[in-house]
Image (cartoon, rainbow, N blue to C red; front, top):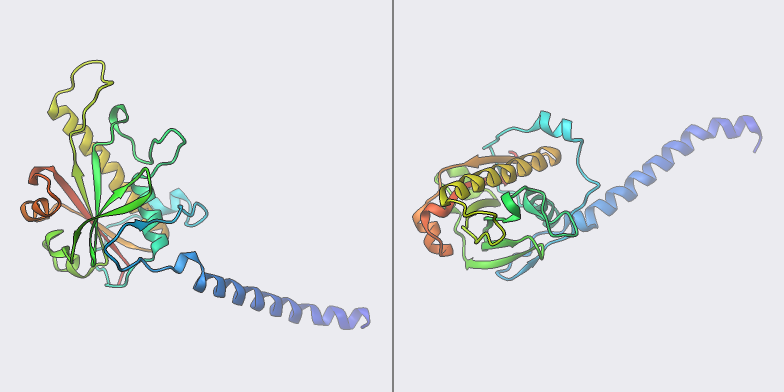
Length: 233
């Protein structure tokens, strides 16, 4: 092949290489970890390690952050659930501290994950979901229609854990205020993750606190807020 013929063939070879690369990437995406479904079983759900290379910049996520209640019933993937919970309150340092701050390092807010198969408690230390109640309890997790069809609801629950390292006794009301700050950070972390991944999210105060509390065996007043997540319609 002479030089002129070779130069003429370069654009076609470039297009072919791009198409081949694109096909390979699409194939990997279709069969890779990112597309694994959430196990539809009432059992411990082992979450994937967070994928730290996905998403957009923080400033772009802030620009896109919004409340969207127009949510479909399409289920999120196991990787999305894993990343979302890690973003909310996952361990991000060797000393066990997390993505959301907590006063005196006492994490007093638990995240209950409501899936169609049941309610699960997020164990941040093990990065897994522990089954709490079997069945579809989405109607207890909210009072709006979109909550009942959304594939994922988070319910944030306050637990007044002991503070053995506090320099002085901390009044319960003060601890609850600190807990509210902790919840706010978690909620915003979820919002930013969803903005970076094109998911819809909305935070809600309307929860059937009495019945949901009975189901997970906590007092109604311990239930702070809930958050609904899914693909936008």
